[in-house]
Image (tube, rainbow, N blue to C red; front, side, top):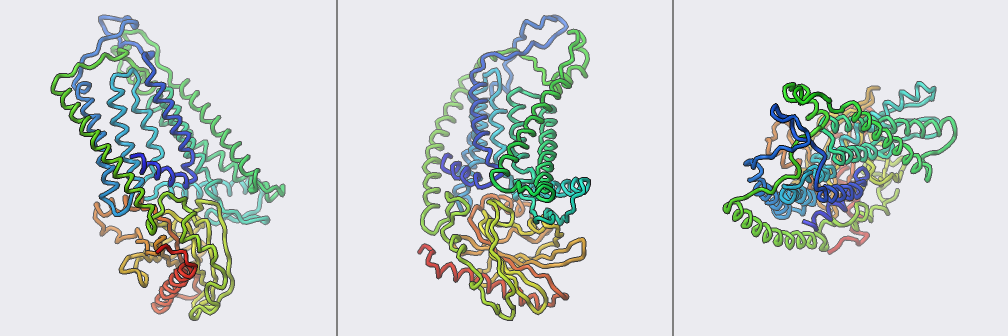
Amino acid sequence: MAPLTAVYFRNLWSQTHYQFFPVLIAAVAMLLVSRWKTETVQVVAAPTDEDDDYDQPRPRKQSLWRRMRPLLALAVVALGIAIEFAAIWAFPTVTPWGGYLGLLVAGFGVVMYVGGSRPVSLVPAWALMALILMPPENADDQLITYLQQRTASFTSQLLDLMGVDHVREGVLIEVAAKKLFVEEACSGVQSLFSLLAVAAVLAVWHSRSLVHTLLLFVSAVAGAGAVNVLRTVSIVYGLDRLGVDLLGEPQHTILGLVVFVVALGWLICCDAFLTFLMRPIDVADAVMVHNVWVTLWNRLIAGFRFGAEPLEPVSRGPVIRLLCTAALALLAVSGGALAVASTKAVVASQQPGANPLLAPVDEGKILGTLGTLGESSLPRDFDGWTLERFEAVERPESNAFGEHSKVWVYRAPFGSVACSVDYPFRGWHDLRVCYHGAGWVSSSAEVSSSAGGHGVTDVTRFTLQKPTGEAAMVVFAAFNEKLEPVPTREGSGAAQTFMNRIHKALSATDNMDVIAQYQILIQPSRPLSESDLADIHSHLNLLKGTVIDHIRNAQEVTP
């Protein structure tokens, strides 16, 4: 499992909002070690009518659950190994996400097996590793977009109260000094993900109740949102009123650290306040036995636990011991085969012409040649469209629009047209998310195939509308490092079967190809006819052909 997991972590590092994961792994290791070394735990015996003495623990019966727990734990380990095998052979490409999911599931089985008789469960500590499992369908990207919009909205309201003249369109805030895009670094994404991880570690470390933990998560969301709105307001106010550019370095990094420390202090204070509010109810033993509400509060809300500690070893019959031994031997053989198979799969993926999984997202050898694209790369007369200007745009890493963009703005018979090449991305990139962040509302998408795409459905087209009445249309597609078309994730809507939707979600998560996206943004001066649409698709194919010819002429394609 280690090879695919290492690849997964390498890919995870390219996602800015997950870059806290090394600290989380260290925290999980500390929790596992501390809980393993714990021989006793401060709990009390449940009171009874016959014995009101809290100091005498009550012996536990050997329940069926405790006797069968080792077999169940080994079954969970087997499930994790099966997921790992599926990640290697059941999909057309090596899938680091599936490899990490297999490790996560197998890890649950391992901690259940080795920690069955420990006084403090190891499972909650290992469960923290699920915080860095990227959700299917790029749900984290959707959350990023939502947080950007909320941050921009609250920032605009505060700026109005402060009398700062500005214009907001989606996540774009424009003042006299500068037009600002509310980037992920200023929208609370990093702080939110990191604070949620801190909240989870606090809850596990102090064995907080489920209700306490959920309220701590709510506090983390509220705190991250508040301090990041404050940060964005500070940046805009500094530019407009004080002439101080807090976007420059090291000012921006220092500001980010300050607001994160403030949010961390807020979270710790909330944890202390919740601990104060959710103290166990101290009543007489007889009341504890007969009052169900007090019992529910103490056990579910306050997290007050009763039990006999430490647990006595479980006596297993010869059948259970035989099954456990056989299962362990089978898992050992399967684990060895899996280690060899996953290593071969990762090594094979690094051969010439294969998907460069171990390369950072901006180090693709083929797409790296796109940096030499310039104004002259496309003709001034682009098959009836006249070039007006060219722009090369550089953005922060992991920006929703791509780190690099080459944009040619043309005048067409039906309006203004912007041809753009944006890169790099990991996997198929839903361009509508970017335009939603810029204040547009998109329609449902229509899909088709580009020329030379061998029938692959790779072209997505949708229309845009703003509340001001401004309208536009976007047509886009993408190709990977092999110069192959990247299939669109758009389907036929409600006509898709349930299994098709699941397969699409898993494929989208597993596909980590380095890709470049090419698009045409049309802002028409009149309604578009069928011949106009055909002309737009024809130019999209010309744009694709020109870019691919540029790459091949650069002689960077591996034979």
